[in-house]
Image (cartoon, rainbow, N blue to C red; front, side, top):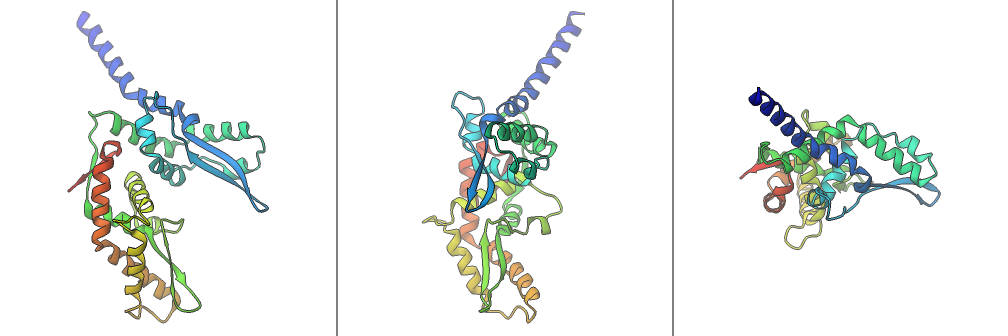
Length: 257
């Protein structure tokens, strides 16, 4: 009988340890996520950021070393937030309260935050493993050919709202996406790994080829060619490897070198 009671108590204790991180971080959403209403000219918009949380929090290292990562997850993997409703709210306290409530009730966001917290904080849980080619397949999608100017020049964007992830990936990898996005964005003008210069160099290579008479066909072919150019870019490869080594303790996946 004692053994049965001991085993039952052990199961309850283990379950409590497993579930506690997720419960706790949801309770800290109010400290982590910020939203404010701002104006640009006559237009009102919602400004969302990730706060740096107090060092006394058990999630301080995880959040403060992953602010860009978490912000990407918030931007692309929340489905329950009614921004039209929030925009109509005038009182700041009510706005923040409704926003946090929506995040806590968002099952899609719950899932990605759950993965982040449990795989980073619980060492007994194995991380998904990817190789560099798989990571590059995601990273190159943040180098976009947006259009063609009246003068016949390509218009490009890096890490903008327009990217090819949704159009090319049947299975999404939220945390790999977040890592690639923030890594590229943080090194646009980096002295060692200048992703802006690498992108401009890639666009210049596109002009060596006649990629289409029809504008839509030309843009589509140029985009595909740009993916290949960036996939073969050694600076991007080295950047992803080096940044992974720096951040691997705070990432919920493992990169196979």
